Length: 196
Image (cartoon, rainbow, N blue to C red):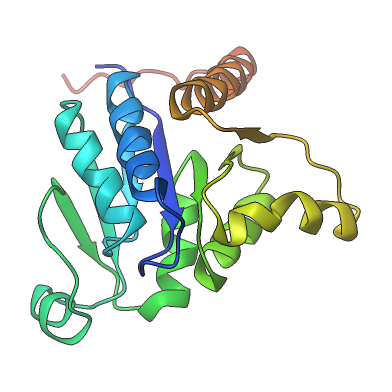
């Protein structure tokens, strides 16, 4: 079975986004599923939850990484959803620790709207040199990323901007497939060991 790429959707867990941002998150989740990848989220409400709805509609797989250490804590303390996810991993590392694990677990990250947590996930992905998609016109921190890149003077290789979820997902998958081919080209297979 061929390994699927994992794309994280990162964004606001509160309704601080302009009209259309939740629909855009839904469309991103749907496109991730339809284009053959797995959706990763922080298992929260808002943008992440809407992307899980889209992934389910697209017949895809959705994995959530929770800041909580147990399902009970996830639901009762953090008051987070459990629907539309095929698997929830309870990290027990609160939000900042969860952000690191979530971003490191993903092959690529899409930023939609967002606040400080979304910026945190962006900087982790950027430092890890992961492909990043910025869904434009969704407000929040995603609308500031061009400026952040400009003032930080670190370039913007593998950071893609688009207003269309289908195109954005396709751009990320194209880069991931290219990187995968490069890895396989330089990979030396291990010697097979017989169990007889």
